[in-house]
Image (tube, rainbow, N blue to C red; front, side):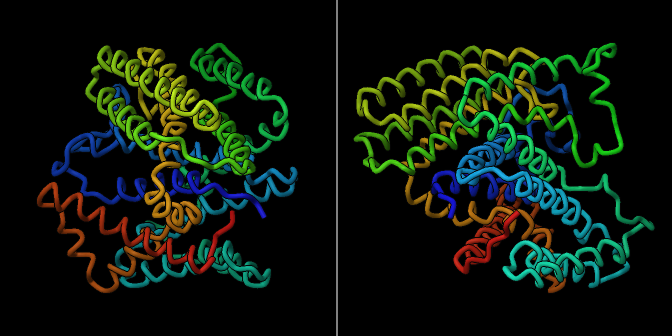
Length: 440
């Protein structure tokens, strides 16, 4: 039985919940720009790659990736198997393809209620395929999923397309394969693992020179729908995550779980540090941000080191988090400022640092951990439940029109996201309580 860490589950749960919230709030001009991706501002939400800065929404995906990286040592602690690793990769890749194809928006409105019933049937197929314990049920789920992909009446005469997949899950598939292999081969030597990052840095920065082999490597090829070299950049988040996972594993194995005095106050200061950086980077208060970050970091480290000199785990998380955050601020001017898309090196370092700091804080917010961890233990259900269950049910019952009309004010626009997020969280927590886990 693999060991679990509640703070890691909570971090993953936070990422999933905020991912749902950011995708279900009202779009348009009713909410301020900091409620959306920094590069997709209201009212038109047109992607502007030249717009620097980050918002809370831009932390969602890197936190989820970081949690995946941290989970690798915990899930592979008993040994390595290429079969298991490849099966996980294949499962996630199929999940990405099927989920994107079974959304009711893919089917014509003329099909009426059937477009929603297909999505609900797709959810049943996923429950069988990834949640059933008996092989016969899993096989029946696979057959049902294939039948939907082949026979579903897609709009505009379209059909199953390998290049039509959920980009987030496909990134996770690639990172599960690469991150798992890299961790296994470097599990006994952290230096070798970190040596991957300078090579990756050269690979990425050289791709923009058209005369280079790097540029050729990033050109389209027949299997780029499955293994995409553009995704390799996220190893800058996955690899630091594996380090955090090793530290979590060491803490789990340790019998010393006593909380240092004053740690709650330190955790609050860490939250302030993260929140301030998001605000300052979004408003472009770069010089003030650097000095205030240095001041807060010094206070946090001195406070922690003076309170409990034996709490090596917390010291590691804080030191790594602050180091990566400051490194990211040093890279901020590079590539035109921090951006999620196209992701900059500043973005990788800053968000990885914030993920380390969040792990430290969550271990001291026990009530919050207990609320978030059930969702984090079942992230795939939480990820699809809104698109494949809640919205189809609301549409079939006619309640969707009330949801669609919640766009007249900022409070309504935010409340519509909160409602769907709470429904997803409660349903996922119920599945976790019933031990209905989707294993990919």
